[in-house]
Length: 176
Image (cartoon, rainbow, N blue to C red; front, side, top):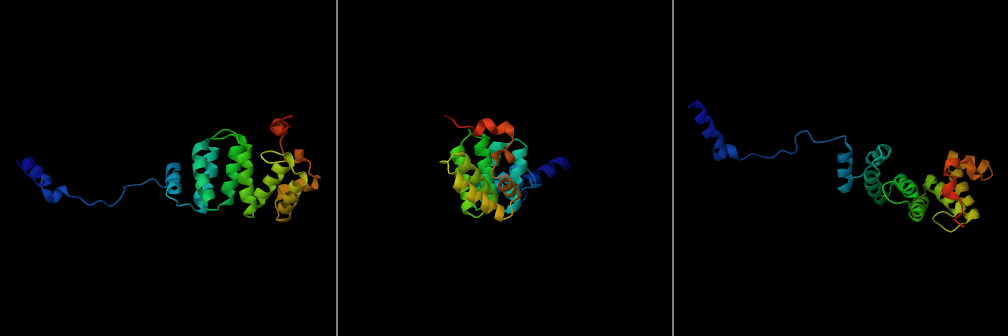
């Protein structure tokens, strides 16, 4: 009898209506939560920095989603990461033209890494028309802004082997 009364009370309309107070124990520090923030347009420096860990975890498609949202919000570090992903075919087919455009966006926004990378693109003619002098000028600007890799390249008289592993030489070899 007692069970029947408890069941009747629980089934009554007063107990049937419950208020929602949100998600109990929502995800907080997961890749999925970071990507959800990015999809909602809620990007911050720390959210964008998470893309590094997503990339290192080999989740390149998700890293692209995050970096694209961050780049749209003006984070130049995300632009240089998009360049790296496009240049190496991570999460999408290799696309040197798109990589150079990401480098250009970062450089035009004043990012020394973007300047350095676009300088390399120009010196090699990868993704853009070759312009050795224009490339050197960008490397010089990045070096003046304190980028150690640019300073090292300039000190080596622009010897690209100074900053490029020999394992990548095939990628930068002329196609003709």
